[in-house]
Image: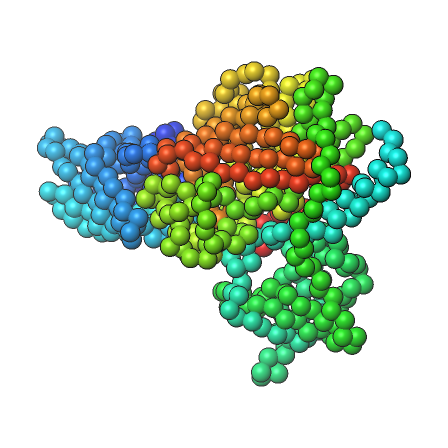
Length: 131
Length: 374
């Protein structure tokens, strides 16, 4: 919970401008939800994503884990999302996360992404919604 | 200014033509809410006439097949349009028995778009809002000028006027021919890629909006301002107020929330309407303008992504930059040209344009998008 609260604070600080973006690139904005079963970085997850015209960039759990998105794509055919980011566990070992999902309720400002996450340390369901 | 009798006659005839002309599209795409393939006839008793913007609603008690009394909402055009078609307080009153013909709501609710209303007792058709041809200009009248020879975008002192009746209510790239209705709804979604040079995600989003009959339009759903070129394709027009003393031009928007845009003409750079507004993007952006000969040219950036900048739902991003050119060809005609630069949503800059007609002797119609009403 502390992680989420810190994350929410970071969301307010870092993503104020993105909060109004509702009708532009569908991934742009802040997304909050769960990557269930994640024993390394907690069950709750926060993503802040943006679009510069060519690339989707962003951070997972800004302010706490600060996992920089290193690879991302959105396929409008089915609105399929793919995200990759590196993190470190408590021992300092690199953990690479791969998130795959699909945008649901595309037309809504609080659209969601449902899919899966996986890393060397586990896998599970991903469910996040745009704030 | 004094008009000679012949001049009075010309102005009167022109005004009559303008007043008799339909304003084009309704507040929202009718097909966003109602299904043209589902006609419906309602026979019932009027319980309420809800006379409010953006659409008048007539509520009617109708008996269903089980003889159960159900209340239906019949949506009509705006109060302005109904008034101009001859409606008044006595046209329909609670207790009147009427027959309504229209089309059903897409969501299956007890709502219908009214196309015909007949008062059963008299057989009188009371819904007469019919599309009419755009105003036909009489002989071209010279462009009004300021004392220094610069064209006026607005009315001359002592008179009123605004711009409306765009020659197109749809924005597509110059030279593109697609079959599209006045709300921007494509007849064939497969034509979407022709409309403008969209990036794949923008094309996908545009197609999604089209397939949903534009029902998610924030201007319709949430009364969001019609920023960008869309403001010049509004049903109730726009009005220029040139404040030369303060070196700015106000663009008053007739539809939507009756809001306005400021175009600075004092030579400032792109610093905007709100001090230091890099993190406060706007519906109408940050606009600066200057005259190039007889054409007023604006450069606008700093848009937010909270609205649709065209009828029909072409996407944009906060990288959107608009270069707009306004040329008052004659008193009655404004040529509007716009170049869209948005590397976030489009693969290259593209342009579009249309003309607007002068509605002389009037101010903007009073039409509000109220309380997120449908």
